[in-house]
Image (tube, helix red, strand yellow):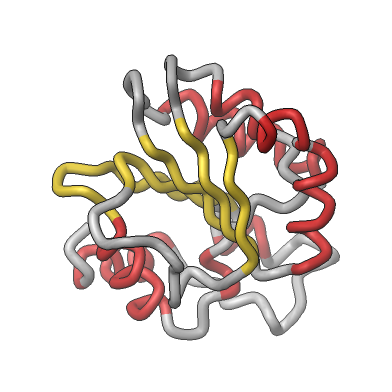
Length: 159
């Protein structure tokens, strides 16, 4: 998945506007392969991550033990509809290929909005519904939505 998602991750990283000292949250980080690239975007960043999968959290911790020990990275297991963070904590939040798994996107987006500082930025990397429908691993568990529907959902939640 690291290789198949590399181009999408690079696209999000290209647009990810981070500043000195920002607090950043990645939702659905998988095995944490790209954390170091995020941390190179600006000085003194603190990166947090939350993932629904215990196996992915375990793998990401193992793969990034040095970043955790340096206090640059904090990983949690959980869901983006119940984030274990204080209101207004993050300067930037991002996720890649995560919204396909949100049954109730409004709940997730409201919770994400809760943990963002005023003026914070939220970045989402996804493939189009048309591309996703052609991929062999996509199952009915994926909630595929068209671009207009996604834009409407985000607008309804104030993004």
